[in-house]
Length: 377
Image 1 (cartoon, rainbow, N blue to C red):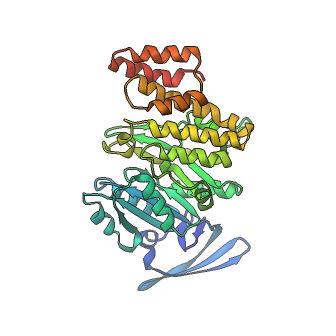
Image 2: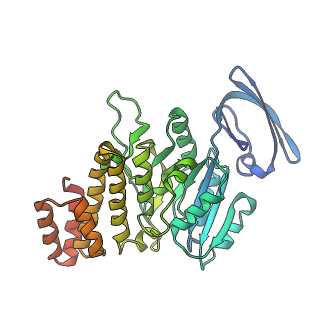
Image 3: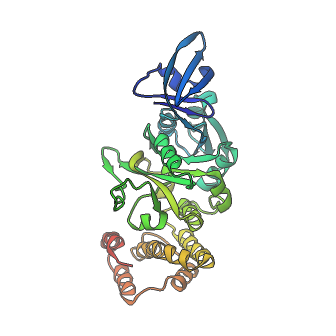
């Protein structure tokens, strides 16, 4: 099978093979000519210094340009792993953009080693939201894919997601399942959603119903059409934790269906003790505020939208309340009052929270962790 993208990127599979330099050195590709004849294509590839023979095969044209956006802060230990995983895609992104969010280590030198293959831009430290928004602004492609600097795409990630989007042309965003990997282990992290009742593969799901089934939709697994990012306003620059979930909720309120690759397509590495997720874990004020704000937006959009969003939002708010009761995070009194107004607690939930709050901290954390998974809302 021959895959074509614009600008010209090539994947020859099964029948054909081409030198690795053709896959990994697109700057050496000087010309690509195609002639279509009843589902076949003739390719004449001219590469610097020599010619590659003509080959023939069935064509599948991938016309969706994708830009990869990577926010990086002190990522010298991981950034090459992330970039290499994008360069090694079977269908490589048209643009690779790294936004250095005020790094003080050797991140800049690591990225600049890739030359013209990677667009590098530096900014004063402003958080991942601002860095991702700047990368979106710099990108020229229709589709934006996100990759955190300490994560890694598997080689088929872009190809699989573009296939889902081509098969579902009405969808404007897609997410891929993920594997989690610690320092010395690898384990499945995102269990595939249950297949449709007719036995077919489930490549389109409702966002809120899927995450309620505990599907892990995480930033490095997303490809999103630029129009959705512009419509929703992008990442909230005030948030340095939970900013991704906040944006996905705003998009899902307007576009509830999302493409889904149940096959794991990327790796969530847990070897970065300074990740943004860990740095933001101490304060849950802005994430809880975002669920309250989005709940008010859902109510304005109508009862059907509000009904789809409320169970997920309520679960996430109660998750934060349990963390606060276990003394794992802070939430202001004003935010607690707003959350209680929009998501009033049942009597048994109040009793659970009070019970956790008087337990020793170590025990409270364990109990809260279990309750977050089993409390029925």
